[in-house]
Length: 189
Image (cartoon, rainbow, N blue to C red; front, side, top):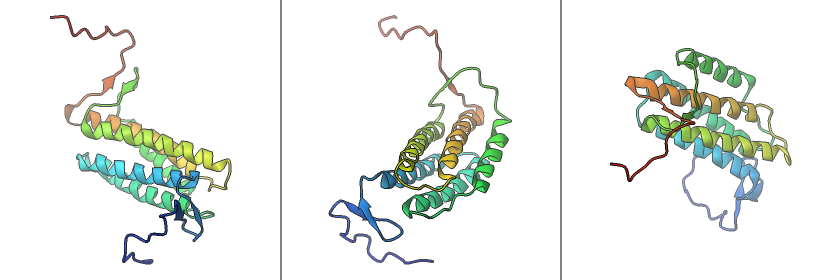
């Protein structure tokens, strides 16, 4: 194991900078820091999904994803470091196919909801999309390993499918968008 933190605070960031994994310093509001910070936020939200109880197969997958996200955060924190490979993308795609084959075909858009775990999975999906956008922005000014963006793109798809799986578990239901719905009338009795 690497260095252990014996003190949590260092005071080195009090001036608005933070240390990257290669020892260099950058502004705390840089795109790189925003990208790996959002990846960390995503990992935390997946922890929240897991805290609400999900099927064991989903739990195993999301635990693996959390490890991948930790690796991805390290990749984004250390300029020039690559941790995510094509094998990670392949795993996401086969996992997506596995879960999706049991789901009913989509005929309508789905609104975030269905259960606490499914709703949190939708939050994770939207944070994943934000992380992906930040990696795209980072690519405009710095080198980013080739699989980071692809990983986040596939992961957001997987989180959507897992939200559906979780919403339908134990007889739950998905919240479908209704185009031609009647407006809510609170005055009607």
